[in-house]
Image (tube, rainbow, N blue to C red):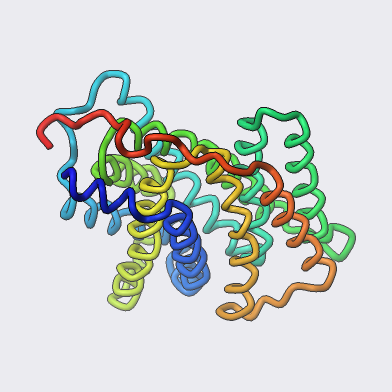
Length: 296
């Protein structure tokens, strides 16, 4: 265990966060075809369900080490993950991927600003909001209000997810907590996912869902858990400034969603706002400050 922790500490946390972003956005872009077959809720349920099974197989659930104070954060993280996933996939079904990611980014950016010790940082969520307005271009044609609302819900979920992930990651070593929270997320998504997916699940959909589950949640949730154990929510939220740009790039490459010049300016504002919101923020001590797990 000591050797594993030392190796984890040797990997810069920002590389884990960037790898997580790439996996999330590629998985999101590739999910569009499955969403068309079984709906956003069905896709979220299958991805989280398969991911939950994978985590249960590779990581022993730390049931004996769960204290009463851990129950609410674990359940909260699981439910938040499920709701966020359903909301995000529902949004990209209606709105271009880059726009949804930019709106969702308001969540971690707000976390970064609120955790900052300077009042100046509070201006950056407003800057990002201006960028989102340019992205949605409400003055051009009709705006999909439902898709925007789902993206906003995903933004709230992402902000809560960051805070709860750090709390859970500080309490449980490795990724064993994910063997608890991801199944809860799958059960949450099942409420809307099962009714959508029943009668539409094929062998091709199942095979695609296994691959998508690796891209999200298995790889990014693992990387984010490890990164957040060694970074503050502010620093993590700042690094996430890259995600809207990644979303636009993959939207162009995979989904052929080309942004207008005004929308490119909007993305630039969001990225600049995220980069300027908070600097530094590495958590001193990192893995060494974690409490040991019972039985492990």
